[in-house]
Structure formats: structure tokens, C-alpha cells
Image 1 (cartoon, helix red, strand yellow):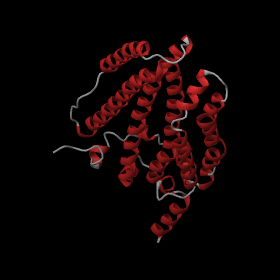
Image 2 (cartoon, helix red, strand yellow; image 1 turned 90 degrees about the vertical axis):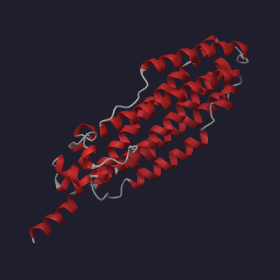
Image 3 (cartoon, rainbow, N blue to C red; image 1 turned 180 degrees about the vertical axis):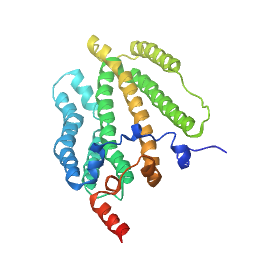
Image 4 (tube, helix red, strand yellow; image 1 turned 45 degrees about the horizontal axis):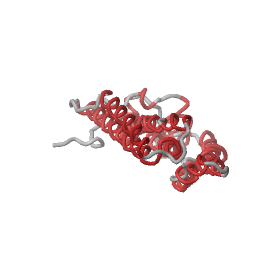
Length: 275
């Protein structure tokens, strides 16, 4: 029977969930108190989301205001996910406001904190792609850029494949297949060669050596996105099991009632135990 990533029992999940992975410390437990949760929605709503909005949707438009080839390309290709970024930022603000609601326990808080953090990473990835895609099209042309996108999607697929199999190996003790660094190197070399060839056959409308060189940064952007995908998936899996088997991990890590439930509920529980 094929073992799934999110079907492990507590004993198996304990191989993946560690105190270090969850980062259990006083700084984390303090968010069970309302006064420590107020800062996040304030920060996201008035600083982080507006900042991401400016660099993700307004900066490309500012560049496109100028009358030159690069500006025209950025206006057309550097704002592809502009509406998507706006939607993600709205969701981010909404989730950050919901962060104020008291969670049932610290396990639920950990999984919700993940979802409060995820939109920031997702919007950052789209912003980075939009900008580098616009630069790539201006530098090596649309066909060359598509070649790098295909290579980048392979980066992401291999990163997710590897982290899923690594986690399954940790959970169930099974040896899984793994893409070694040689595959990344091979794909990168093929992508570079094909992009150079294609850019000579289907060149950009105007050649600019600086843009041509920077255009290959699209591969670096995808490598960064692949790394973030790997980190976020691993983080979600750890948070998921910590929340799913919360009471067991509470005992294992010797978390107090006040840290786990918050001061108010801990006091109520203490009164019940005292009766």
C-alpha cells in the first residue's frame, strides 16, 4: 500500500516534528496572548502589504511610463501577474486580521501562523517572476524566456519531488528516489545553451548586452522559488502534524497549560482541576 505524506500516525510523525523544527520558545508562546497578536495585522495592513503592492504592481508601471524598448516590454510582460498579486495581498491582509482571533491551542496557532505567512512568500514569488520575466523578454526575446521558464518549472518540480520523498523517508523509514544536484546542473546547462541558440534565431527587438546578461537571472529567480517551495512544503508538513497530534506533542515537549492554551483558558482549567 502506498503511504501518503499526510497519513502518518503520531509515532511516525515524531520522526519529523522536533522542538527545533517547531521552534518552541518564549517568543512563540507569547502570541497566545492577544496583546502580542495586535502588531502583526497592523504591520501587514499598513506596511508590508502596501510595500509589496508598490514594488509588485506600481513599480513596473513606473518603468513602463518611459518611452523606450525596455519600458514597452515591461508594460506588456512585466505585469502579467499584477492582478494575482493584488488578490494575494488582499487575502494576506484578511488572514492577518483573523490572526487576532484566539486559537483553541498553540498547535492550531502554529498552523494558522503558517497560512498568515504563506501569502507573503507567494506574492514575493509572483513579484520576482514578473520583474525577471519582463527583463528576460527584453534581453533574450520571448522564445528564449519560455525556454528558461520550462527549465524553471523543472527546478520547482524536482525540489517538491525531493522534499516530499525526503519527508516520507523520515516518516516511514523508506528509501525514496531523489534528484541529485547533477540533474539541476544538467537542466541549467541545457537551458543556457538552448536560450543562447534560440535568442540568435528569435532575438529581442533591440539588443542590449546588459539586459541580455541580466535576462539569465530568470533561472536564478526560479531556483529561488524552487527553494522557497521546498522550505514552505516542509514547514507546512511539520506544522500540520504538530497541530494534528497537538496533545501528544504538548506532553512530549513539556509545554505548560498556559503556553498551550493561553493564560485565560489555563486559569479555567486550573480551577476545574482544583475542584
